[in-house]
Structures are given as structure tokens and as C-alpha cells.
Amino acid sequence: MCLLDKKAFVDFITTLWNIWNYRNNAIFRGKEEDARVIWERARKLNDDFRIHNFSIWSILPWAPKTCKWDVIKLNVDASMKANRTSLGIIARDLDGFVLSGKAIFINRVVNSESAELDAFLEGIWLAQSLNLDKVIFETNYACIINHFCKHKDDITIFGYHIKKARKMLDSCSKVDIKWVDRGCNKVDYSLCNWSLSNCYNLSVEMDYPSDIHNLVISNVI
Image (cartoon, rainbow, N blue to C red):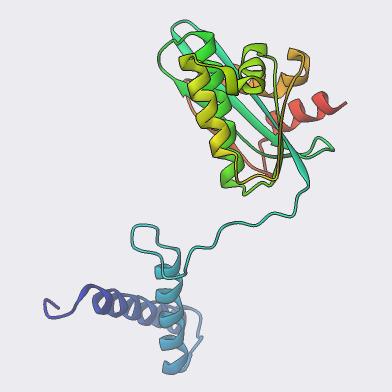
């Protein structure tokens, strides 16, 4: 076996496993199969493993995700408690249906301005990962909006970071940022509180957990 390369060795072990499985079926279930069937099953198992194995270079070329959504709202929020910080980001369509979201736990406290900026940046990265074209950011932190709207005349360090954030959004055909009341950010706020209480990160997609689902439904209603 020392003469086999890694790929050949994996093929060999998989074939042995399928032969062993075939013998069990033949002995205990009286089910016999042609040797060609066993070989094809082993070959397909190897191909599937290499395609879905993330520890090696992907066999299938990566293609950016293309979504056919129209305008997407991104709610961003941040919370601080007991020397801990949490960021909450939720992406949803105009009907309020949650498409994706995350809660990020940071085991240190930062000032509110920096925390809200980090949440905004996380929202931008989420928009990029979803390949969104038209986005509306919603936040209850007016400072972010003021710097975003007056970035050309802003010479502060915070304004510099906002300019970099705007540069990241150049690929979008439409970008807007709006102030919303904390009541409109209830899902984000709840995600932040969940992350602070559990000291854990959380990612949600369209198949979000039932407790998050209840928050979304109550917020839409």
C-alpha cells in the first residue's frame, strides 16, 4: 500500500468498504449484486467525496451566487453589555421575509460609534456575499447616517472609514441608508441579546431556527 498515492489509496479503501458491505448484504439479507455494480457505487462515492470535501482544492469551479431579488433591506445593530459587544445583521426583502442574517459576539467592549460601524461593515460584507445589487441599510444610529451622507466633507477618522465603506458598495447599482426606530430593529436587537447571553456567534439563512422565526413574524405583524 505504500506504493499507492493518496487518491489511489482512497479509491482502494472505498472499494474494499463496498465489497464488505456487499458481503454483509449477501450473508444477512440474501441480496447479491454484480461486481460491476459494486465498482460503480464505489467510484460514485469517491467522486462525491472529492467534490464536497472542503479540505482540498475544489474540483468544481467556484461561481458567484446570483440572486434575482430586487431591493433588499439590511438592518444593522450593535449592543454592549458587561464588557462584551455583539453585532446583529438581518437581510430581508421588501415583504419582510428574512433571507440571511448573523449575530457576531466580541469578547470585549468598544464604544458605541465603533460598534455600530462594525455592524455596518458586516452588513456590507453580507450584501457582497449574497451578490446584492440594490440595498437599503437601516439603522437606529443617526451618527452613521450623518457621516454617510456627508462623507465628501468629512475629514474625521470615522469619516475615513465611512468613505472606505462606501467604496466597497461601488458594485451596487443602488445604495441607500435610512434611520429607523429601535422598534423596527427588534430582530437585530434580539440577535444581539442572544449572542451576548450565549457568548456565541449565530448565522441564519432562509431555514432560520423557530425562536428567530417567531421574532421575525412578530416584527412583520
